[in-house]
Image (tube, rainbow, N blue to C red):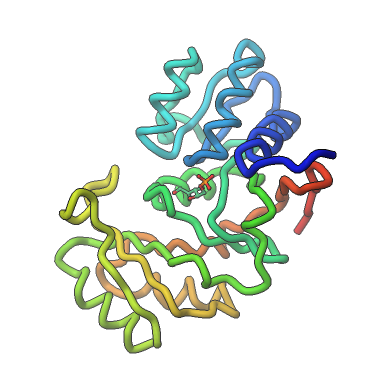
Length: 226
Ligand code: 5RP
C-alpha cells in the first residue's frame, strides 16, 4: 500500500467504524478530526439509523448539517456503541482524551454506551500514557490549586488559552493541560484525580476505556480488542 498521510489514515478508520453502527439504533458520536471523518461516512447510511447522541457542539453542528438527527443524552437510555478518537491509547484500551476540549461530554456519552470503539491513526498507540499533555476540565475557581496539586505530583500544568484568555469549554469551565506525567496505572490515577475538589473531568479514560480500537496503519486498518 502506498504511504498514506495521517489525514488519509483518519478517513480510513472513520469509514471502517461504520461496520460497528447498529441499524435502527442511535449511535454515540465523539469529537475531533478523526470523528469528523466518521460523521461524513455516517451520512451515507443516515437513513438506516435513528440518529446520534453527540459529545460536543462542534459534532452536533456537523451531524445536523449532514441531516443526521441529534438526540439529547437524557432522552436515550443506553447506546449500543460510542465511536470516538483519542489523543493516546495504550495496549489495554486506556486513553488520554480531551485534546479537542470535549472530554466531559465524551465521558458522559461513553458511560451510557455498551461498547467504546476508538478510531485512531497509529501515532496514537503508546506503551504508557502521558506523553500527550493530559487535559483536565476544572471549575475556574479551583484551577490554580489543581495546577499546584499536579506540580506536587511532578507534572507541569498549564491553563489552556484561546486568544490570550482561558479557553471556556462547552460546559462553561476551564481546562488545564498537564505534561511530565507517566501514567502507569490509569485506573488508580483517574480515581485519585477525580476526588480533587473542582475537577470536573480528568482526560484519562480508564473506567470508560475502549473495547475496540480501529487503528489506521501503513498496512491498513488493524482491529485491536481489549
Ligand atoms: C476531543 C478528543 C479527541 O478524540 C482527540 O483529541 C483526538 O482528536 P483527533 O481525532 O482530532 O486527533 O478527545 O476532546
